[in-house]
Amino acid sequence: MPGTLYLVATPIGNLDDMPPRVAATFGAADFIAAEDTRVTLRLLNHLGLKKPMVSYYEHALHHGEAILQRIEAGENCALCSDAGMPCISDPGEQIVKEAHARGIKVVPVPAASACVTALAASGQPTARFVFEGFLPVPKRERRERLDFLQKETRTMIFYEAPHKLRGTLDDLAVTFGTDRSVSLCRELTKLHEEIKKTTLGEAVAFYRENDPRGEYVLVLAGADPARLAVETAPTLEEAVAAARTLQAGGMPPSAAAKQAAAGTPFSKGQIYKELIK
Image (cartoon, rainbow, N blue to C red; front, side):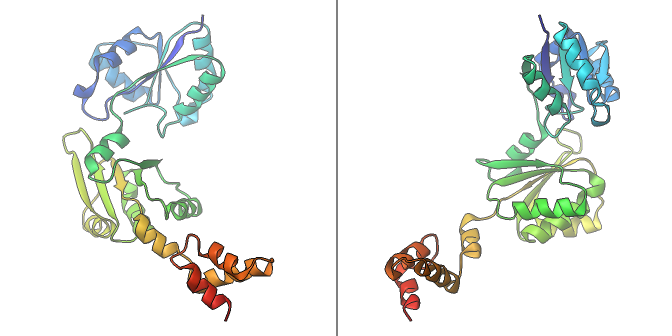
């Protein structure tokens, strides 16, 4: 019988946050697939465990086939990232995808996740959110991604390294405006944990004078739906032009005005009045 692929979440900073089930799963596994075996080795030493390990890091994903073959042969594998839930903004997702395709049982062993931890403590709206992880590095791809998010009304979550934070804050301020609310959550669960709710403009100014330190989760408020509706609404001239196009296609003026008014701040009567001039 094939073994099981366990997705084991590890502490994002404070080792006291490790649930007993995480330690038990590491102890019962036949081998461990780690993002970085050096990081996981320190965790195993803390638990007093010795286990064979293999890396599944992005540059070693050719090991993925060997990992899956070992599971198919009957071994149980505990897959973990350096911190938090594996396969979230993490190359392990490809191994999980292949495991499902091969009929291998996948069992999550959850614990802390930096994105959800930051969201909960951010003071930003939490009912609906979108996880973006790390923004693309190439300038063109990054610009396209941010342009795509301009009309996003859900709270957005980004990861960023300290040496790239200033550039990312600059890009976010240009895209979303300096008055957009953002929470900067750094070093979560660690000694120097800090959660700062501010605006993009204030954040840019602060880190112009202060060096970023630690890993960051940026929780950015989404666009205000009412404001967005006003900003993206067509002008009266555009609505009348749409009505004229409908009329040219054979639609009566009254019906054309009614259809063109849908989804705009203008009434059928306003458009009809302009249409028959």
